[in-house]
Image (cartoon, rainbow, N blue to C red; front, side, top):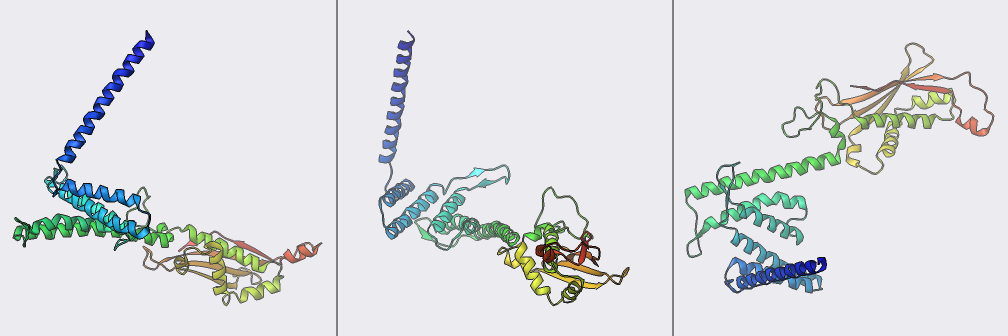
Length: 349
């Protein structure tokens, strides 16, 4: 009994599905036969036919040539079919024509795919509002009988407002990509405060005091690398050689800075590297003239929310080591140093 019920159920369902498919095919045939030669449906059919030919072709230039016609027919058909379509939105309170925006999106993708004028998806998004304004404005220049003429004063005012609003949208998109490119080229700017900016807003950021310098992890990383570089250069030197090397550290600043930048950045962010300045200064310790004070400073020379910029300073004490055991091996003798380098916590200024 269960098998018979299942068979009958499957038969009825298959029969029903077959009837639905036959009705759908009949509707499609009816619509295709009713398409007028000069209509937006004909343009879309020409676009579909062009894309079908595009898939059959093998040559690169032949495919490019056919794709141009496919995009043109698709743009004409979509613009023609959506020209009078509009929707009343609760946000703006008046009828909104969404057809030009859809057609402009298709046109932007077409320009991008053919690498014509628009060469990146950022450029496609920036040009989208301008193209939408063009598609929305040109019907106002078409008079009855397919004659071209200037619109009236009210129409010209609407066109000006339309292009101004579209230009504003395009400028917003372009400004967004400009900020993203700037932060990608100079990521250290993200550590600064944007509270006084009217363009850039950082979400979920704790309030900061403008009088307090920003804490830059990259500056701390550069200080750590500078200290490690100095220790490496002084390894194996006795106290006299250490004093001689530190006395010439100002002349070694450019080489020291390039070595530190190479160890921290490598080959990345060459533009940001030029905005960091690393300096070292050596003087006699006030408490003990036998010791030296080594002051390391990392200064940011780029854009900053503080008028005078900011810097990170670290003070180190270099003292002589006298009570170290004699080396037992040649390797210990090479690593043994006659100094002790003690650094305090960095201070932002």
